[in-house]
Length: 177
Image (cartoon, rainbow, N blue to C red; front, top):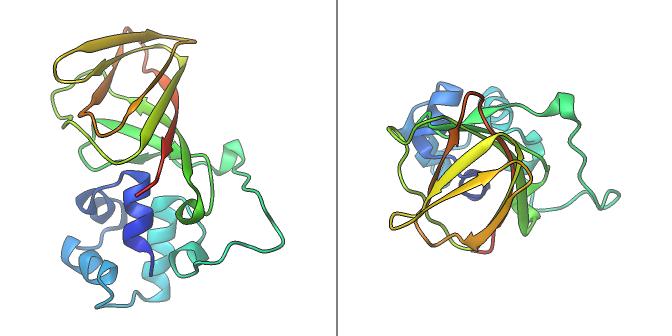
């Protein structure tokens, strides 16, 4: 079971995944540690919540006949990360085997419930629509539609939408661990 790897690469907390699936954090933790094996119904819920194919939860193998990933616009599901400060939609399948994790990000307009995030690797943001503010604890950066930002993801950061409409960003995270 590769649940923990997939969950971390998607930036979803155990609490957030529990909320998305209706399963307890304790049960999910046991699955991640290999102490429990989910039922087919539970595996299907997990795959749906994480917007991945159910076989990605169990297999380390890429489809040998398909060296690419397509996620059609109508197939993207919007998820939240547990603290309700933002939502996102994965833009790739087989995320456990990829170095880059692309997704769409839809930040909320305030930092009130948003904890600073930090993780290994790098992060690239491109503002597709709207305006955002990125808070690096000691500095805040404002980006407008068409602007891009690339940074070391170990630097604590959080993001919010500015203006009247919710921003939409393309985010690519280097998932080296």
